[in-house]
Length: 221
Image (cartoon, rainbow, N blue to C red):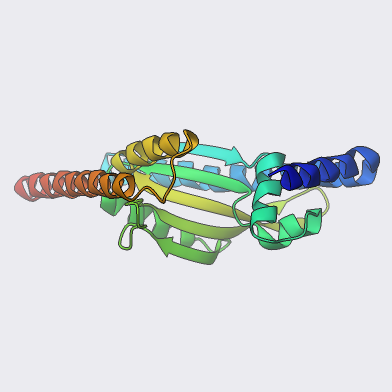
């Protein structure tokens, strides 16, 4: 840990000592912020269109974030990548992140399809942790997309990680994150078992709520 802290300090000093380097990373973070704005705008538009067509919103909330410099450096080090600006561009897909919270499980896939079917969105990776949950029970749909941002004199392709989950899945993930923040270890077998059981109960509830909604819609027809 001390070695990692020393490398972080050295990395930061590089920015302090080289104005051009500091300016470059500041601009890179601005590009990521612009990419988030592009994706969020698309999601807002799709939500409004869905509201007009279906008389309801599939998206409850949209949360955005940019990784902090410390978090970026920690991940580069943990993955064994060089601590450099070029390494950030080449190796990290989640510097810019958007979390989309949906009402129902089927909304997750509808939103994902509506977003990725747009011709200026390129899917770089897709991980379905809903159909294939993680060992501790974590569920969410993860997409890494590439989207162009239009600057004053150029167009730049930028990567954004999009996580789409239900309200219930987000509730579980938030509490699980809090447990990890309190130094919980995955080596604690009993804790992992209990977390998985809670995640399974929450998913079962999600599916029951979806079934109720579908039954009510069938009655209306």
